[in-house]
Length: 69
Image 1 (cartoon, rainbow, N blue to C red):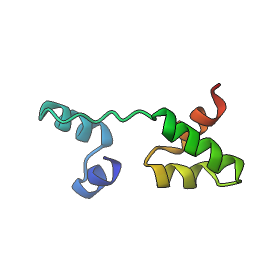
Image 2 (cartoon, one colour):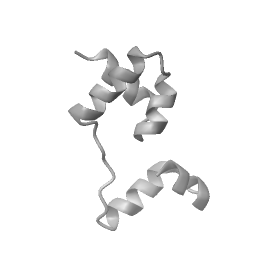
Image 3 (cartoon, rainbow, N blue to C red):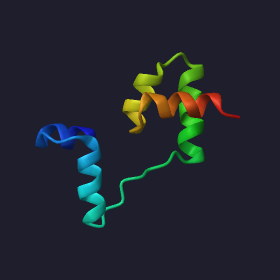
Image 4 (spheres, one colour):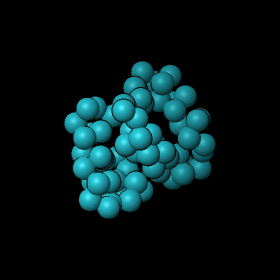
């Protein structure tokens, strides 16, 4: 969504509102499989940023997932 917002010259929040108004869901939560993959990659010394890009989540979301028990 961030890339689409940048391409359109609007904020991420505006893009989210427009999509929500159109009935498009924008929330994607990490599944247990995603969390396991993130933890495995982190244990193998992959950066949170790299993991996030590969799995499609923000660095913050990856860090939160690998720290939560």
